[in-house]
Structures are given as structure tokens and as C-alpha cells.
Length: 399
Image (cartoon, rainbow, N blue to C red; front, side, top):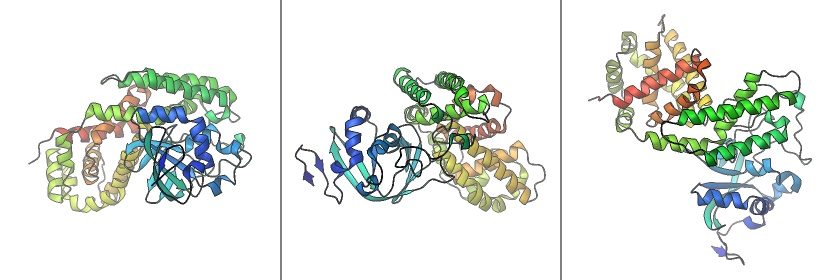
């Protein structure tokens, strides 16, 4: 360990963190926000492209708000998953950081972690990692502009974290939107049972922003519903670190659910399915179905467990239902009913050991509660099936 002239304690390292150009900008431009976050107990992780990487950019590029907020991460309360300040998902997998908010290509460019430091600064201890490239991928260039033409933007709603391609068409509206989200987070008191009211506020803000934004979008102009839905998705992603811990604390741990998810043996699953009155076809073919569920369906359940927005969770559950239907047809079950899907999802939840599945139910529920138009959609059916499974596993006393 070594102390700087200012008394700041840092670990010895290859690159001097306090000489890194981006860290200098963060300390000067974002210091008050960092102090506020850390004082509130938020776990902060700062990602610094190495000095050699930053030298290829200009200061007007890496000092932009977008660049800064892409490199300041907070825990997403899911192991290995973080959110940028705006709620965009970033995964840390081994020695790589994988951002999911690149809009310039169909795949995100991961960065290698070349240095990790625990430092003490701004009155707090936190972690800094040095990486071999910018987390913004190919979106930001020396000119400080996105080379993608606005007319080339594909009008599609992303399912999870990530920026809105629509909001990027008006910097003024985008800034106002995030300022209002910040005000909502700081002024609205979340109370158990009032999550739907918070969801209604989010929808109202997304609708208001979409009304302001639609006139600035280039032809072909997307539907209002598409723009509104995308902005609402961004709102949920941005507020995730504020909202999801509240839901988790409100719901708490269900000991019965934990116990029922802990054993995925065939005997145990057979017992679970018989108690749930699963169709006889499922019981007779359990040993045949199980490998398919573990290999094809469980990965989607795991993705749902790591998803940030309720929309994304619902989308993964739709995939679960579709893959279960395909499995049943593969083993010659001709009439796939709601009971078949419920039984298959029960198997998947237990095999995935989804002990905190009860937290996802109100998260999706608050979104669906303010979208009655979705009640007849397959997403609502998939979420209801999941809820039924979790409620059964949360109360069923299985010997």
C-alpha cells in the first residue's frame, strides 16, 4: 500500500489510478453524485479504460455525460450483474466486463479486466477496475459523435437494459426525462402495497415523454405505443437499483420456497408434481422430460432471474412456455394445456433452484397492473403461470 500527497491510500499497481484521465474527470465532474451514492450505502464500481485507450480519444469524448455514466456501475442485486448510472445492464464474467447497452451493432463488445484496485477516496472505500477498451464499444469515436445515422435507427423495443434509440433524437427531452426520473426516485416513498402506484407514475412519465418526443423522430415514424413502451423500459432499468431492493425486502425470504427448490431429484419432483395435480402424461414421462427441461428451459429461467426490467422477465417466461410446448410435442403429447405448462414450469423452477422466485412476482405484477391491455397477451399468461408455480412452492408442505 502507498499513500499519495493528499493522504489517499491506494494499492500499488501498474497504472496510477489518480493519473488516469477519466478518473480525473470523474472526480471533478461527478464527485458530488459519487459521494451521495456511497453515503447512501450503494456499492460503486468504477470502470476505467487504460490511459493508452483514452489517449486514442479526445477529452470532449470521454468527458461527456454519456461516457461517464457508462463507466460508473452500481450493484444490480444479482450476482455478477451491475447497472450503469442510467440502469443499463453490465455483466462481470471472470476477467471480462460485458456491456449490454451497445446500439451500434447486434452484439456488445466485452472488455478485459487488466487491473483491479481497492481504493479509498472521497471519504469511502470502493473498487476500481482498469480495462483494455471503452465500455461504449464502437458508439463513441474521436469526433464525439455516433456514426450511425438517425435515419438508420431500427425501431425496435429492446427487452432489457440499454439506452432508448428514440430518446437519443432529442438531447433536451432525454435530459429532462432522466432528471424527472431522478426526482421521482428521490421524492416518491416506496411503501409495501403501493408498488402499482409507483408503476403508474412510471407509465405517466413515459407517456408524457413519448408525446414530446414523437415529433422529433425521423421517418418512418414508429407507433406511439412502441416509443412509449421503450421509454418505460428504460425507466424501469434506471430505477432498478431503487425499486428491486424494496420489493425484495418487502417480500422477504420464504423458507418453504427455499426448501422446495433445494431438491431436484426425480423422486422429489415426482412428489411435487403429484401434489400439484399435474397431468398424468407428465408424471409418466418425467424421466424423459427432465433432461430437456434442464438443458433447454432452465437457461431461460436463469436469464429471467438475472433480468433487470419486468418486461424482460416476462419475455423470458414467454420463451419458457414456448420451449415447454416444443418439448411436449417432441415427446408426442398432442394437446398441450395450461396444466402441462404449469407442471413444466414447476420442474424448471425447482431445477433452477429459484429460491427467490417470489421476488419476481410482484416486480412483474406492478408492471402488468397498469397495463390492463396486456391481460389477454401471452406474456400475461406466462407471468400468471409463473406466479401460480411460485405460490404453490411457497406454501406446499412436502414431506
